[in-house]
Image (cartoon, helix red, strand yellow):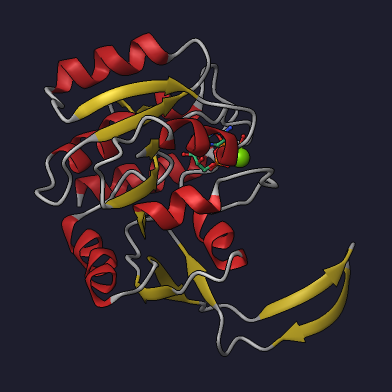
Length: 218
Ligand code: CTP
Ligand code: MG
């Protein structure tokens, strides 16, 4: 599943982030093409920004992404968007992989790393990277404390889950969460962290688009 329904407030483009330009294509094209081309993926459900469902479907057709099975209208939060998309995932799916269109450079290596733990009985697996910088907790501008970095990782998408576990995590009243794993964790799910990928950086601001474009060219 591809979460692409955000508005991209911080990017500040004249259109939703998924349709901002990365080179000469919409940002969404990169992750969509890569997921469609992966042997590990059978079907793709896209959560598109309201009013952008048609352009998303047309883009998938243009790119020849035949695995796209449906495109839903995203909601107010990422959690809402994922919940709506999850409802379109076929009952027969054993594993659901949730990816953010904001991370265009998804590759097969990281997909393989997150899928492996699921066949070993884990409920989910997520890519994480060690933190390089020193972390401080602040109150406005005042430093309150230095946070112990050991045992902390920065988490990315794609995230993979056993389908029934993910469906359960989205049942009932679910508060907005910044990733799917946190909802699974809250319900006691066992989630394993695997090695992330530095190329999976997230496009938040316009400068990030330039960095991703440079990575693509390298
Ligand atoms: N997302 C979504 N539905 C929402 C909000 C976010 O599907 N209502 C998706 C975005 O499209 C993105 C991912 O969740 O791929 C991560 O969100 P973020 O990077 O915060 O994107 P935006 O919410 O679009 O950006 P901003 O917060 O700057 O508005
Ligand atoms: Mg957001």
